[in-house]
Image 1 (tube, one colour):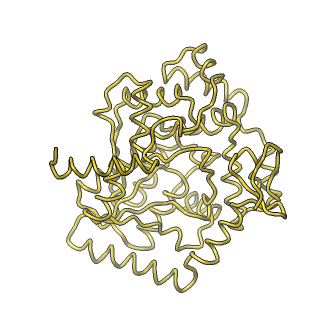
Image 2 (cartoon, rainbow, N blue to C red; image 1 turned 90 degrees about the vertical axis):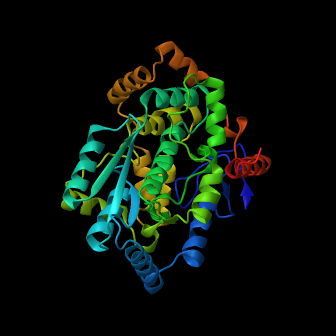
Length: 379
């Protein structure tokens, strides 16, 4: 493979390009993501009868362990395609009794709320909505914007993860269903973001730029997620869509026909924050157009041609009038003046590694030892 340099290059099989600073290409101009997906598809992915056996085993295990309990599994529902389709299959096709959790971080679109209500009502399932304290969420999101890092969605995503585990613990549910899948999201450059579960990172950015206490913010640390939850509490995270021939367009059609679901026009656009962050903040300040990753994921899984993706990339990422309205709403909701916002957009972009992170080996070791001592009551 050839390392990326300052010369612009775009993959000959996808629409990924050198806006990802860590991308590499082979002699035919094919990027590392294509080869990575092909390796997974040919050597790791379970297919056909093996996938069916694994899915049946997963479902039966949840049913058996859920006997006599109110719920046999738990899953988050954002109102997006993946989670909405999964909950439909979970209830209608697999006969499971899920507890559905939605975390309201203050940015739900009206359409997302309607989609979630339609899904829950049509399937007759329980929904628990956890509302994050807005003053705390606002303070954290302001902090990440001021920090000038790419992934300003971390506070919102972190609260989703922490909230889901909190409800799982409260209701003693061991099986957690996740709508993540390689068919529609196999490509997501590391340089474009950072892991939302990194509490060390969140605390360091908040310490520098925040003002409010994080006491009311839902939190989960590395020790809990990587050690306590899977090994002590025995939580099992399943990704059932990996065991299906999951097709995004077919999933959308089913949701529209069966549950009156309505499309948002972009991946993760069910959140007003995420829409503005992905469609304006990232491409304008950092040059990262996440449509490249989303469309390229569909290309490598055979759900879209490169020509179709190129045509979509040539469409405006934001309607000009809608952008004016959303920008005004966004900066007002976060409490910035127009001049403050302009300063933020013109500030030097920084990598997440500029701040503390639990992804550094020495911090992981220190954090695990400290958390273990605290867990055991050792001074």
